Length: 79
Image (cartoon, rainbow, N blue to C red):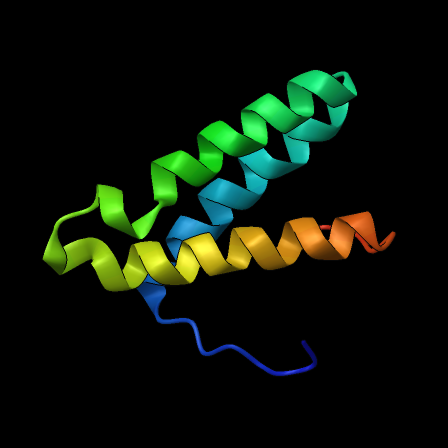
């Protein structure tokens, strides 16, 4: 991606919480990791949020997708 993402305080807090949960996925067997990641994505999917939270949910969902893509390339998940 190579671009800096501006995170307001609300997004920083959300990403920190998601990041902590995301890191715990590594402790699970691969099949369980996949299931847990899908649940995490469903929780943050923009369509599951009201209009007021859709912007935050979209950014967190995009962060999750990006982090997953980076992890499959051998990079470390980070916030």
